[in-house]
Image (tube, rainbow over all chains, first blue to last red):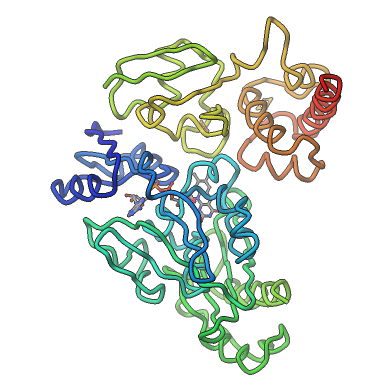
Length: 265
Length: 160
Ligand SMILES: Cc1cc2nc3c(=O)[nH]c(=O)nc-3n(C[C@H](O)[C@H](O)[C@H](O)COP(=O)(O)OP(=O)(O)OC[C@H]3O[C@@H](n4cnc5c(N)ncnc54)[C@H](O)[C@@H]3O)c2cc1C
Ligand code: FES
Ligand code: FES
């Protein structure tokens, strides 16, 4: 690790000010992605701004029938939250399936979506449920506009995710085919029947989470696993790597989508 | 930077760089070498300790992040010279061979048993997702954790 300065702001306002005044500073939340990155010397920040002690960024509450999750809320807290389990059980189950218990104790939702790893789980829930990402600049960014590419988001360099608001779906479920070592998604599919229509979000399969519109149309016509039998998934934009070839990922998208539809009921 | 924390019930403090990892602080500054470093890439779980009651990988935490926190390492589990039921069970059920993964296994299992005193074999195996063992094949580790859970439930009952 290269040396860096360390700041531990006590409020969001202080964190935003530190970040704005220091273009070479980076945020630290759970550190489950960023500390390994620092150790590999893939990043050389002048300063690290630790969000870990900002009380206003952490916690889960019901809002407008859905749930709002503070950016620094760890995965384990989401997985075990009575509110999340009651309002959106699919989201609690997704959080429970991330990594391992120690990663879930530290890793946060804000860190996960800001990082936008192509194989991360939360982006599938954010897009699948049509969530809204709230930021330190007072913006409320729609899920469909937030994830812009591999490890890229709509966040400005000096913008902090403060919370994510998930509306309550009629039905939802997530199914993933995990990498057996890390539990990251080789393919993960989040399906939801929402007030705004059917949404199907796919993670792990391509450089960035995306909506599978062909599957959405088939499911809008008939909400059943059989409804997607006739849909073909084009593998040409999907990833090929040591874990899976593009055509296999295309196959897995349908298999995971079917499992998710069956689980959603 | 100066950090202060409670480690195994004792107030400690030290001068660290912001980039000093918690595991380095424990091993090099405090001489608590029971917490191991296996992979240093956040995957093996040899370095698991408890921070404010929850298990965490000490190789993936900065010492400055846990300033003011309470940390428990494998050295803090035995009480009054008596092995913790998990340590006793690993001994009795041959839950280790080389022993390198053992401190992390036991600290991870201790977090499981405080959340779920009566886990199924499947729940134990799922919980150990972040702990790798190159020797045992896990069988006796799982057996030891289930045995410890049973003896801890017995102790809790006797104390009622
Ligand atoms: C062994 C292992 C297995 C894992 N398995 C999975 C898995 O199966 N599925 C999965 O989805 N993930 C997995 N992860 C990743 C884990 O979920 C991370 O916690 C997550 O990707 C990042 O969250 P963090 O809080 O640790 O962020 P950090 O590592 O602290 O930060 C990550 C990035 O986000 C930025 N950032 C953090 N918070 C904010 C914020 N509020 N606003 C703006 N930017 C911010 C940081 O500057 C940094 O660039 C795994 C990690 C490990 C080590
Ligand atoms: S040394 Fe920390 S996880 Fe391997
Ligand atoms: S006993 Fe040797 S690594 Fe587990």
